[in-house]
Image (tube, rainbow, N blue to C red):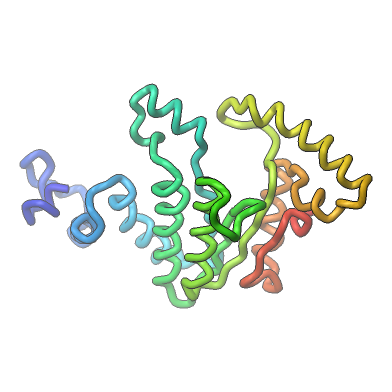
Length: 219
């Protein structure tokens, strides 16, 4: 931050010699171009990490939740209070920009959501739709996965999810009985372990390049 403001690599006025000068100047240029935020400060690290390892696949599994944002706002935790635009869209855009700078470009595997693809469905799905649109226009080979409910152990309590998943499961079962099997398959819950295995499977399959995997395709 001080380098972007003063042109000198200092920490509280003291010369800072613990990082390579080129890396510090990359940080300063990012701040000048995009403004000062935690996300912008992470951009050069993302780009340099991708350039160093030159991966064949990049997995973008980034996202926040309304519950996490509410708790963070109450406790003054600015790091976790950021919303969909900054986390789901902003951080994924940084990762995508890093992938786009590589030659050859890696395949970008993006975890979206059932219901994404058209706008006007609420903040969460609109963020996922924005990323999908950005990804299609990027020129980077991609695979988009659209699971529905993801169930299993979580690092935070989700009371509505615990109540909603059994109710949704019962409703989907009824829908199958009246001929709505295709819709039911699209919104069936999946465990985190099964989703992880499915993401690896489609990521390693060239046939899934530039395609969208709906819930039924994830097994």
